[in-house]
Image (cartoon, rainbow, N blue to C red):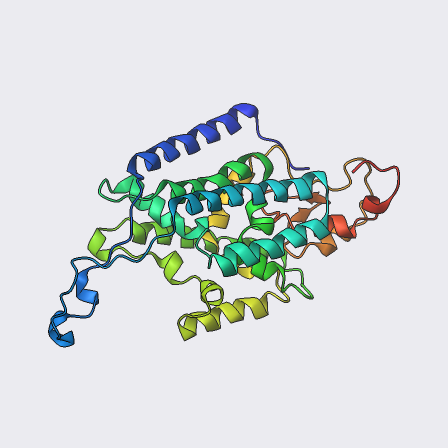
Length: 319
């Protein structure tokens, strides 16, 4: 049975997150992207009296729209929690998954996503000259706070990277537990590597999470051929191995896993009656059910266990 963390531990974890958030808040300010004039067309080659401007400034998304995106992210996570914990519905969860993929993925082109912001926050906390917008700070911390109390709701049906993989799972196989645990360590190695490369001196700084995002090319309908091929490879593999990127490489998934260990609520299987039939474990493509209990640090909020459970459709059983 999944143990619950003492309230004092959860409060301490929340205080740590609040402290980190405060540090990021000090470094955060509304900034606009600027690129050096050297990458723009040069006046010597254009001719005709053309004068190169000092700075090239792309038109930024209006601030109220950025705030609206944060609000939509919060609403989506609230719906994910409600559909899974209260409604216990696979159908509604799938609907939200498709909607999140459409909006956060293809419409917003993967920009409202806390995964890459790991590096921005790390740099802001270690470099006093580096600033990030408050919108980025909010997007980074909200899913972590939610995970601290109710588990990985963001992963389930809100994250566009997870949503794309969720919708291609066809005939998943069960990865052996030892292999699954070993592969799961890769995301922590990637997390440490990404932070280490991000907090180097500015001239050597490298944001590898964004540079090697395997799915953003699909969202933007353009990208490097090798990254598109890697993304396609993950999707093909994902038809038989549930969400390989989420489970084994996503660095933000590692952070969410840590936070969800302290969650007081999450997916519960047949809370009013025990069958121990094993149907839920067979239905879970993510290896997140152990001894007929959902393992909160691994549970991705897909609600497949509910769809497979005979108790969910049995009158008189409290669900």
